[in-house]
View 1 (cartoon, one colour):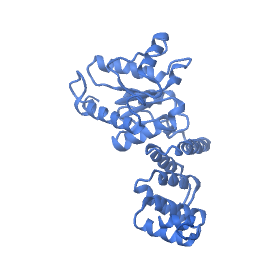
View 2 (tube, rainbow, N blue to C red):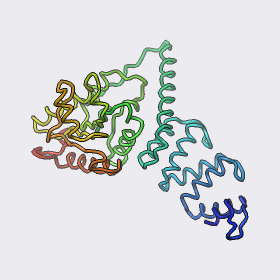
View 3 (cartoon, rainbow, N blue to C red):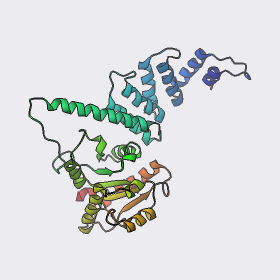
View 4 (tube, helix red, strand yellow):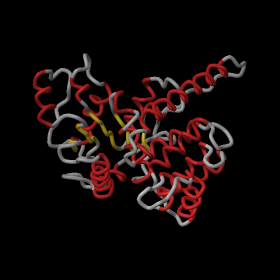
Length: 317
């Protein structure tokens, strides 16, 4: 509070604006672990008030981020993206910080995540094209088989509009809260993975999670991954294995989906009682609440099975 008073000045209190004193009290608050002060002092060092020191700016951002500040996580991502106070630009770390900030509800990180991911994909594509001109024999693309480490616990199906925002935060949630290895196509290590690789990843995953929005209903052709996930779920259900498909209705209700299915049955698979359905906004006002609900369902199926399944999904898998 003292820092704010000196920074702005207050005629009622007879205090003149004094940035040096403001910084002094801000620094005292930050040293006592005041998270907002830590973020603010990081901004001061980055912008040069009272002195410019990008290394210290990043240190303060990182400290606040580790204490749970979503804004600080965003600034850490920006530092790694732009090379501010760090040894070198690191787009992968930038994306990780942006995703963490998004999961915490800091929506301003979404556009930066899109930009950083695009830069990362271009960088990987250029690296792949430069190595392809080498005289060394080409290495085969990795494939997802049951004997490799590329078997995923969860496969995320989505539309392009959601990919950089809530779906990315869902991937982060699954990996950190559920300890699930999760497949999301724009996090593939290669710029343009072949369809076969995606199909194999979906075939061998334990859970398929589809984030369905209104744009699914207006597609001219069905989403191949979603249709395959439904067919796969029916097969597992008929053989009494485990519940394998979870549908998150992003900006529509179950009634909206049902009406669309009745009108265009050739395009959309039906949602019936065997599908785990989550209606965002209707039943879960916050995306984090939905993630928590999904986690509870997934963990229950993994450990104890569900409905008429005798064994947990992990054991069956």
